[in-house]
Length: 140
Image (tube, rainbow, N blue to C red; front, side):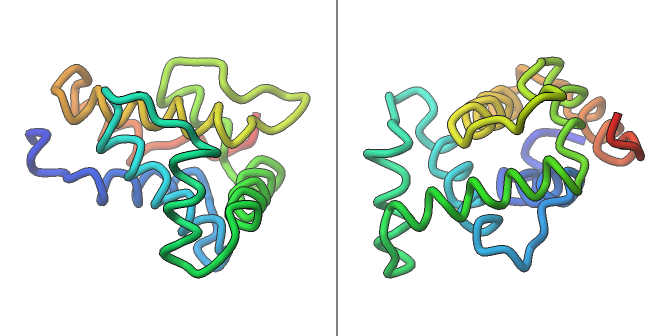
């Protein structure tokens, strides 16, 4: 399977599903949009508060603050009730710990860096798909 077989949108959707982001939460949709914006312009300096939140807010006729809060709530919900710790397995990092959920910026930056590496062929797509098909079942 090549990187072209799995486009960025499909990969974002699959990752958010595996991490147990609840699609009924508005923040999940905003998170998806933020990841897309970041992954599309990864080589350009993009600021979450000044570049991403306002773009999403304008599309949705909301305020930047409400977009930030919705994403934060979705991340928090996923941390406490979902499988967010799988991010550490997927990314080979320690962005998620046992004491508190990651910030919006931490999680979006790590996931968008990962998406950038996948899109540029720096990550083995078959290994990623294996991890995504066989995620850990517990929250440990």
